[in-house]
Image 1 (cartoon, one colour):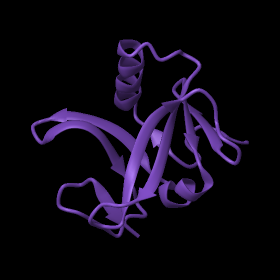
Image 2 (cartoon, rainbow, N blue to C red):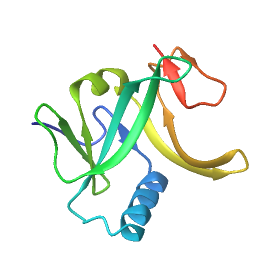
Image 3 (cartoon, rainbow, N blue to C red):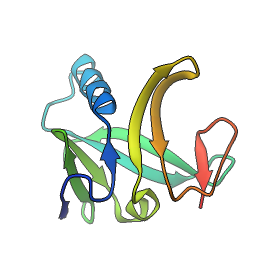
Image 4 (tube, rainbow, N blue to C red):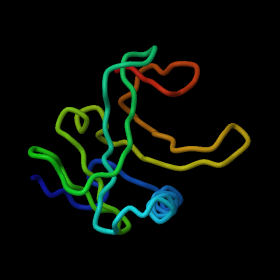
Length: 116
């Protein structure tokens, strides 16, 4: 497991942290779990983001702790997510987590997938 310090690779806004904690509380997710942030093949632009909770990092994962929230990121995803900020929006255009990824060279119309 690689330990990475705050804001070195992926950042998460305080608004997103509040939403992660709210979801954890509503779903009885233990406090020591982390948020798994990843990228997988799919979508109309080639890659999609994935989020979920995990009890511990997998072999080869990087662990990033920001604002008291642990993020688990596998090596492949880390390559595509370097410099990304995870935010949460609840505005007029919808409610949900938003990835501000400087590596994305194209995105689909719905904003659910990206390409590099």
